[in-house]
Amino acid sequence: MSAVQLELFYDGKCPFCTAEMGRLARWDHGGRLAFVDMAQPDFDCTPLGVDMAALDREVHGRTRDGRILVGIDCIFAAYSLVGRRWLVWPLRVPGLRALLATLYRGFARNRYAFSRWLGYGTAQQCESGVCAAYGAHTASATARHDDPTRNRVALWLYAAALAHLFGGIVLAWFTGSVGLDGYHRGIEAYFWHGAAPVAARAQQAWWMQLFGATLQCTAIWMLALVHIGYRSRQRMAWGALLAGLLIWAPQDIVISLQAGVWSHLAADGFALLAMVPPLLWLWRRDSR
Image (cartoon, rainbow, N blue to C red; front, top):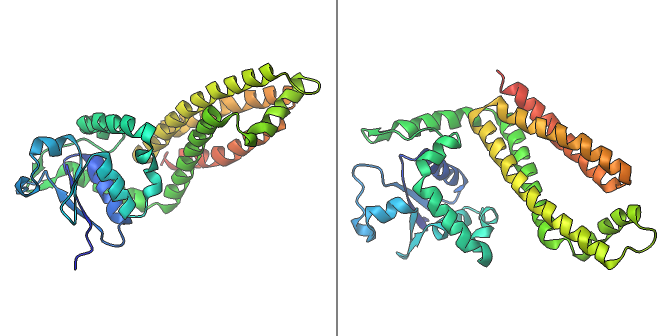
């Protein structure tokens, strides 16, 4: 009996789409996914009961029992089947689901432009059933996979950017939690002798929430630069990240020293040690 539990119907002329299918295929050690390129000239959508216009708008999947999954539901199912549900858990968060579905549909409508902007290449016409854009992507992907050290360093920077995003979410939505009480008291000790007024704590929490939202935005920019640098081997991306760190950290250290907030100094020192060496290494590596 076939182990395939989900057929994915994707646009083989879309470089980003083919890259995503390739990534899922590498993770699919159990053979639970099957991939169908709807850009092939012999593809027939009739058995699906879905017209080509709908297939072109969003990714579709067909389960083993014949159910059709569309858009983010299809993505969630595919990632879950290859053991990567943790990467797409926001797709099941009630407050985020509708927003992410709308964003995905906008991305899908403009997938060729996004493929180009994200460094996956430009969609081209297919000849004899083979897309030149797919071939170009495959060649560049092979080159990346042949450099495992670079891949690991880039993965570390992806993780650092995601850590900033997670930290921003915590500050924006959980700054009043008991777990951050010690942090609040450490800052208050510089400005108040004894217990700080309730209003002072409320004002401090408000500013931290604003900073958390800003940190989330910065994390998205970090992710974008890491991705552009990794995909296109552009030193400019690594240089921009280095410049941002070296502008931010010294000022933050001086300001924190003035207030005696040692937790900030520890965080700044860790950030510099965690990010500057790998960024310098990539900056030098991609100059070859």
